[in-house]
Amino acid sequence: MTAWAHIRGHPVRHDGDVWRYCDTGEPIGDCDRACILCHRRPTPSGYDPCIGYVPGAVSACCGHGVEPPHVWTAWDRRWATARGMIRDAVGMIRDAVAGRAPR
View 1 (cartoon, rainbow, N blue to C red):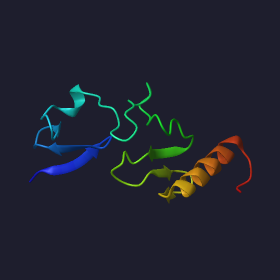
View 2: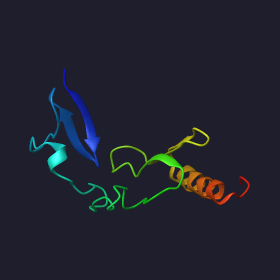
View 3: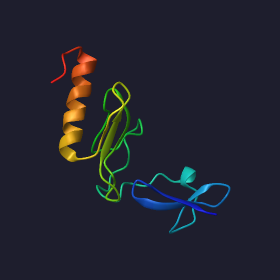
């Protein structure tokens, strides 16, 4: 059985040993591709360039044109998927980190 996923919008598969890009068969660990949506590479810290660092987030992804953008926050275990919800979640995270009361 083969597992399928996406890395920055690029289809990948697990061949039982390593994850590989579907189009070239190249192992994903050997290649760092740009996002298929914005055509930019991740930041030096590994964040999506269009979102950047989100304080307090466990996971944040622009969706890369494959799925809706999301932010997963550890402090209240919320999962935001709509752009407006993400903007609100980022604001709440920044408020919490700064010690301000929730909006």
